[in-house]
Image (cartoon, rainbow, N blue to C red; front, side, top):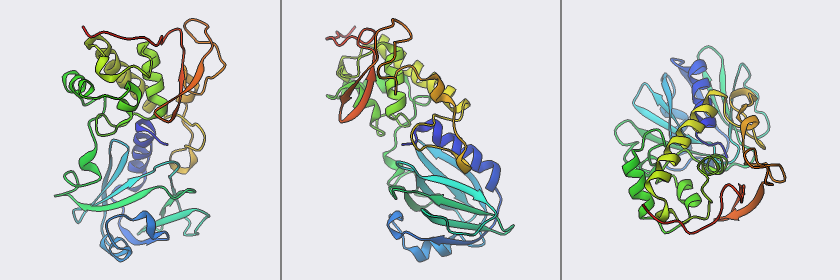
Length: 278
């Protein structure tokens, strides 16, 4: 699933291609992707309007239109965007936006888990899905994050994966952050002390920003606009590294399950133990 760096990469690329383009037509081929409106509304409300900007809120992509309408897109497992000069419906293309210069934006999703919501500038931040999205590691204060962890009875990994607590972190980057902090993913979130909390925020921020700089991580099916691949996968320390030697201690990286998610750890650097609060 694309995480914050991958979504930001797509957003940046979309801004380079479609800003100030006027929409001629919108065609939705799979009604199940649209969650709170009708197909007729989607296909009519944006015609003759310009796309003013594209931003992200956590893992959501937000298209801002000149009529104060908002189109919110979530890529889920493997949604992708393609920008080209072709109106041809390729396999697994489920949305097509045509612009007045005869260019096209296509949404492609082989598993059809992606979603679209239509909102307005007045309500989009205060209604679902965005009202449930927490701040990113770059936005959240240490105090707010610490207080949220104190209230959690879950392990630290599923807590950090909770997009209402902190947004943008997924399976890849939580593994990398916890390794950088030498914290075992099964550690209870409320046992994280303030020094460890500072490390979590520090490394979550630096790792995400570095991945954004490198275009995200291309693992399995991820690619950004027009199938461009990221490069951060070349710098992963533990995620996908089962059987490889730890870069710190030469211990063999293991794969375990935490909260139902495949999780990569160095059991030496991230020793599972009871941790006391400061």
